[in-house]
Length: 468
Image 1 (cartoon, helix red, strand yellow):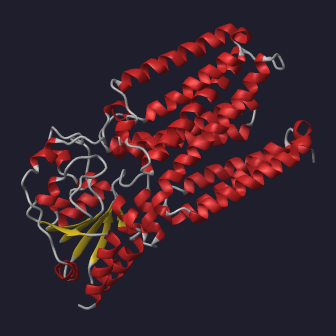
Image 2 (cartoon, rainbow, N blue to C red; image 1 turned 60 degrees about the vertical axis):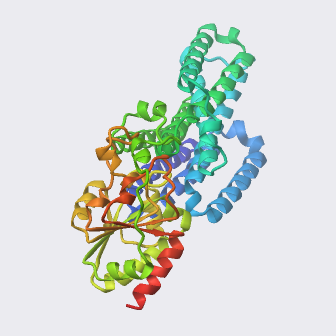
């Protein structure tokens, strides 16, 4: 049995593990197992990469093993310590680091080419520049996305007048320089290729800068696809089949998810990228709120309404993640179910700060997956519900999306919580959501506000329900 046969076998097992793991990630019931299987596939991919070109890396094993240990320890500690609230930020960092790896690999190969140590055809050179550019955009774009999600950057401070025109000009410049580099061959020079890299890094930052906070789930998904595509391009450059397979899977999954999320918002990807949705402006609905006053509900009244309801639909949002209140929601769910109340959860595709954010939070609390309803099923349940409980959600339950043509979210499918007989909204204050627009739901006749930290309010509700 030759070494080549063994590495090929490892490659096929690793590729199957990637595909199988990705398939299992489609359901919360099997997602944990899928993640483990995909992780095993990545481990096999690393082994395949180490042992296949044995002669070229045999003198570098100490560096390779050392890097693996350092990266493995950092990854393990980060994964153990990260809060569920910060999971979108962690995903952004992982996307960025994937892009950075592609940049390093492409830069090294370009250096060898321009120094005359390797010979590359135009097709191979094109692949290297694709890895360089896509990786650069994924890296700096993801780092800015992380900073936005972490609250370290104010959108207004990183945008310029006519920002989208500036982005288009930079993109045309990058494409023109890349075509020129392909035509010039070795005469272009390594220094000029690094100029392309520099512009690409700036473009990645500028690309994400004008995109508002409410569109961050789409941006994270798009950057995820970029990191996959850059890895696939680097795989072509190094003739690494496992990088090609893994990169294509990530790129395709990210692209499909991006399209699905745009459909969920009834918007095109171009509109997301240049529309500025999710900024700090106010919509017509926000201005119209004017002198309207939201009606409050006490903890005891809210508990009585919930306890004696027939059906309750809970709509989680980012506020639930911030408060880390998913375990308390589960406790309230158990109490209501024990009293014969039918409890379901309405999940909007873009609720939270990354795709599937709410599903992950509720899965952490061991809430059964069949209780989680997607948009269409949730709206059917809401029309029959006695009470809709909105926990930290704002933009995904805004009726302005259906009845206010002046609203930035007009046309976006939302959860129609106002169709329930009664609505209880758990919120810290009357401040608008991440999209920066006011929500007329808060002033409707059947809506009552329960102000305070979501976890604290839910704990009090649980205590009241126990006493009934």
